[in-house]
Amino acid sequence: MKFIQTQTLKEIANIIGCEYVGDDNFAVLGMNEIHVVEAGDIVFVDHPKYYDKALQSAATIVLINKNVDCPEGKALLISDDPFRDFNKLTNHFRPFQASNVAVSASAKIGKGTIIQPNTFIGNNVVIGENCLIHSNVSIYDNTIIGNNVIIHAGTILGADAFYYKKRPDGFDQLISGGRVVIKDNVGIGALCTIDKGVTGDTTIGEGTKIDNQVHVGHDTVIGKKCLIASQTGIAGCVIIEDEVTLWGQVGTTSGITIGTKAVVMGQTGVTKSIEGGKSYFGTPVQESREKLKQLANIKRIPEIINKLK
View (cartoon, helix red, strand yellow):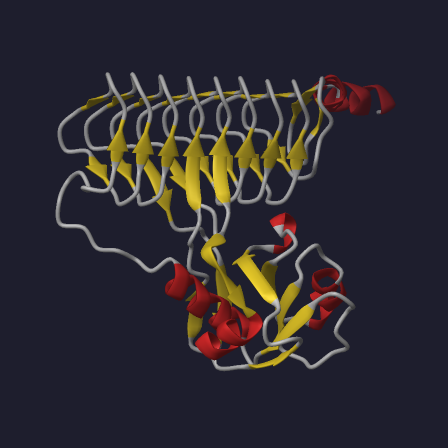
């Protein structure tokens, strides 16, 4: 998430009420998660295991819960609770805006687009030309939709990320300030749920087709011309490259990459990153030919036992 105007280190520290290490006027351009940070971004870290990763990342401002040596060319925000203060910044720069109308006055809807009854379109939504949005679709604030997109009934774009920190009294939610971005010529089936990014974008690439009842987690990026069948569940921060096929009831873990033109057969659990151009099956995931051989051999176990007897 980039800020509308450049902030200074001192201004950010004043917002969250913390100490800092660096020049008062050190430029702060935005805030993001560790896997997508750029120069000028704030990243937060609250566990010693990840200190080095955050300090050595592309982010130039690190919100951290320990006063450590500041890397050259960077700045630190010293907080007793970086998770809480990251939420404060999200609330400050992208606060929730309530709506009392079905279609926000700030929404932009392109020529030839049809919006069916009972659809909700939130603040600052942009919808391109010649789209068809069926009834009872909910499009949360800041969503961007390209041209020639079809979205079927009951689909929800932009719900919060499933991202929590365990506290002694329960779970503390990391507030989502990101967006959903749908590129041109995408088709989305009925009752799909696509969560917005925590601070970045959840993106569906051009020409991709998604069946009914598919879930896409926060900050996931799906490439061009993918096919995703019904009841597939894609976790957060997944990269699905171009022309991937996921058949029904596939599930993935978070933070993995599925390579270009990979085919994942139904009911597979994608537990790790997989190369493109191959077919996969099973849980844990394996190349389908090898997995099917194993299953065939398992069927022969009674026969082998009888021969041994």
